[in-house]
View 1: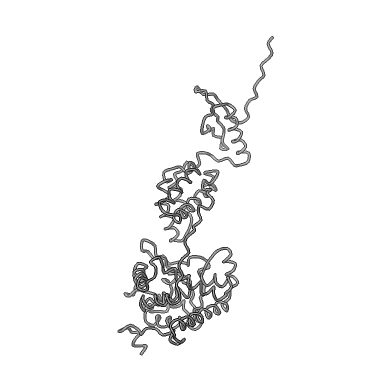
View 2: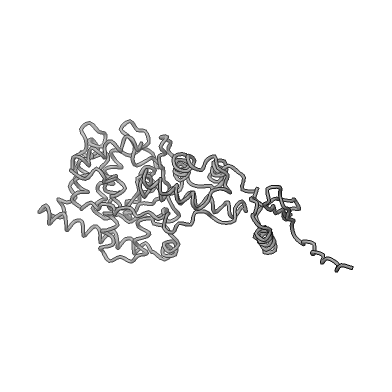
Amino acid sequence: MPPARKRVPRRSFGAIRKLPSGRYQARYPGTDGLLRAAPQTYETKRDAEVFLAQIQADQSRGDWIDPTAGEVQFAEYARRWIDERGIAPTTEELYRRLLRLHLEPTFGSQSVNIISPAKVRTWRAERRRATGATTAAKSYRLLKAIMQTAVEDELIRRNPCSIRGAGRENADERPVATIDEVFALAEAIGIRWRLMVLLGAFASMRPEELAELRRTDIDLDTGAVRVRRAAPELNTGRRVIGDPKSRAGKREIMLPGFVLLDVRRHLEWFAQPGPDGLVFIGEKGAALRGTTFGRKWRKARDAVGMSTDFRFYDLRHTGNTLAADTGAKLKDLMVRAGQSSERAQLIYQHSTKAHQRKLADAIDADVRKQRAVVRGLGAASAQRLPAPPAGSGGAARAR
C-alpha cells in the first residue's frame, strides 16, 4: 500500500486561492466579520501567507484599520474638519482659503486613504515653487493637522505628512521703526489717527485691539488701557467682535506718560460719545474700517519714506524692543505684548501691575531722552501736539 498522504493543516486565519492567471489571492475576515480581499494579488503563495500573517498580527494588537473606512473624499472630510474646530473667524477664513487654493486642487477629489507620503512630497515641492516657502508651510501644517485627525478617526493608519520641518516658517525678520520714525508717522497720518500709531508702537497694541477699544477701557487716573475685546476685519469686510487673539491678549497695559496728553485730546476730539463709545471711529462716525485706515497708513508711510514692506503691525516691534531694552523680566514683556504660549501662560500668572507701571515709566523716560537729544528739545517740547482741527467742538472747549 502506498504511504498515506500527509494532510495539510487547515488555515486558521484567512484563505488563499490560486487564480487562473497563476497568481495568488488572499482573503481575510475583518474585525467586523466581513470577508475582504487583499488589495493586490501575489506572485507566490508564500507572499500571500505573509500578508495574512501581518493582517492577523495587526488585528491581535488592535492596529488593524478597515481599508474601506478611508474611502471618503478629502475635500468633504477637510471641510467638515474645519466646521468642527470651533476656531476664531480669522483662523477659519485662513484655513478655508488655504484649503480652496492650495489643498483641494491636488487632493480634493482623492480619498483620504490614498494620500501617500510620496504624493505629499510632490505636492509640497510644487507649492514651494508656486507660492513660496511661507504659504507652503502654512498649507502643509493644515494638511498635516487634517490627516492626523484622520488617523485618530481610524480612517488611515499613519499620517502621510512626515517631512521634518516642512511646517516651519522661516520668515524674514520684521523691520523695527526708530522712535523718530514712529513720531514722524504719527505726524504724517494726521491728528485723528495719531494716537493709533502711538498706541500701536508704545503700548504694543494690535490693530484689531485698537479697532474695538472703548472709552471704558481707558483709565486716565492710573494711565492704563485694558484690552478686553478685538474686532478683526475679514477679507469680506465683516468685523468680527470677540476675544483678543489669545488668552494672554486680555491684559492691562500701563501707558508711558508722554502718551497721556494724546489720549486725553483724542477722547475729547474724536472718540465716539457715550461711556462705552469706540475710541477710534471714521470721519463720519462709523466703526473703524481696515480699508479706509489702510489707505491713510500707506500714504503716511510713503510720506515718511519708509519701506513699503513696513506694516502697521510692525509698530509693535518698536514697543517690544524698547521694553526689552529697559531690562524688564521676560514675564512682564510677554504680558505687555499679549503673547501666548504654554510658557507665556505660566509667566502671565506672576506678573504684577507694579512691574507693568515700572515698565511703562522706563519707556517714557527713554523716549523723552531720545527725543530731546535728537531734536534738541526739552521734555516739555517733546509733549507738544498740534492744535485741534479748525471748527471742531473740541477746539472750542480747549479755548
